Image (cartoon, rainbow, N blue to C red; front, side, top):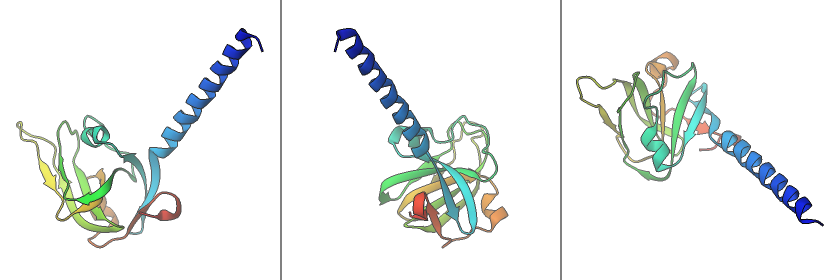
Length: 152
């Protein structure tokens, strides 16, 4: 095979691989979840950089959507509301159960950045628009599952 054909094939393989990775990343950054009896679409956040950014600087979420922070360990988690533009509900989740809810967490005012801490160690944190817990009757011990097979 000539060098020119080899380079074309190599370029084609690289482009196909890049496209597949992009599709995989797009698919792997979103999931469907169930919290209590409510189905919700979630954006997944799995890395320290993604955790730090969270919902900062964003507009309010669409109806029945949220951001799910996925951790590989179970620990006390602390979140802050830096650069937030809207109030949120935060659900602290451990192994498929809601173990805490911070309702109507406010946005920063007068240079005071609200911070919220999980009441006990958790391995998932779900953020939604404020009022979600009240609207859908989500309470402590509500079940939680996400992804294929609805596993936590």
